[in-house]
Length: 430
Ligand SMILES: [Zn+2]
Image 1 (cartoon, protein in one colour):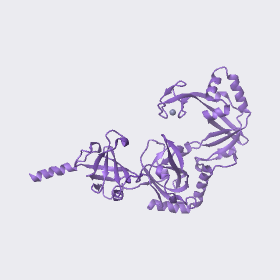
Image 2 (cartoon, helix red, strand yellow; image 1 turned 180 degrees about the horizontal axis):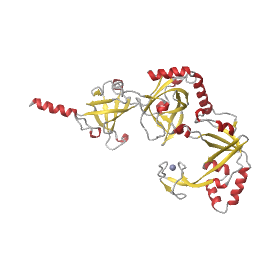
Image 3 (tube, helix red, strand yellow; image 1 turned 45 degrees about the vertical axis):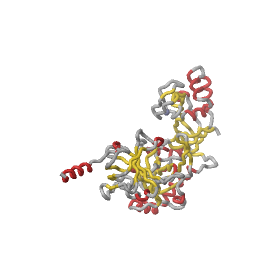
Image 4 (tube, rainbow, N blue to C red; image 1 turned 180 degrees about the vertical axis):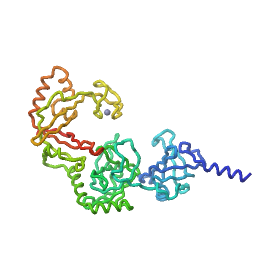
């Protein structure tokens, strides 16, 4: 009898509990989970140091985990991002109401009484799996998969402040390159990572540092970039085969790296005097040696300006894209998903710019059209649709005979799909 009951118990023990079945009442359970996030430890004033985890089971259920104080170092290697573990004996606690991301949320607390057994032994699924820049999946802003990237640091920016929701958040740009592509890549380091110990990169402008950026995800800033997550770590001079190969390549390609760095520095250092490029020079530029943030001034005329090339529509007051609502109506924008978007008059203007060396076609949008015509979009809408035809003709004639300065730069298609087309950023009459 005893033998049978033991067998029965053994059978039970093999059964894993899923994360959505765990509550603070659950006793005697065993879960099989993967660590999908392991945050940088956080020290809040007056509180114990805390490290957050996100665990995921085979059904895709997720649960937050927390490690406190000295236990953080205990689990440094025992729980790694991407690692799969069998866990038992961890205390399940309700997440305090104000921190709940879903109803009845629980979290798993780790201390030295918890049993953590790695599955697959010394499997290669643990730790970072480095991609080259060319291998990073593009054109998918819904992809929140965490990636690990190795690169050579070309530029480290100053901290800037970005408004998200109702607070200002620090961000720092780190621009990297490698041997897989000619296009440098921006990684935005957010929050505490932006304020990181800068000694790591103090000498970025003097020598080329190899860096590992772990647990980052793809972002759409400047067309294509990377953004840090709560688990991201920035490691300078990482070890391993790929890092060694990249270090050697960097040593052999100093000139090329200096050129790429100069391209970024030039774009990020505002010039005092305006230097004018010719359209022939702009037309000769190739995607390979153009940086996303470059700008050029051109001095042009629009001798063939035509009011037929004005295009009017109602668009979203948030993202500017075309909507189906009437002027002033509130609607849900299908592009930016803003559910309080207001339809406002918008306008585009397409023209051929001419200088002594060549021609180039541009399309400008609402703000620049307003500058060029000296009228608001609403005024333009009304002069174009009613008895304002003479006023519009006067404006067009004036534009045809006026010399203009345009500041142009590559569209974000350069970063997102390596296509070079130029867009107007500023219009100036002097
Ligand atoms: Zn919108």
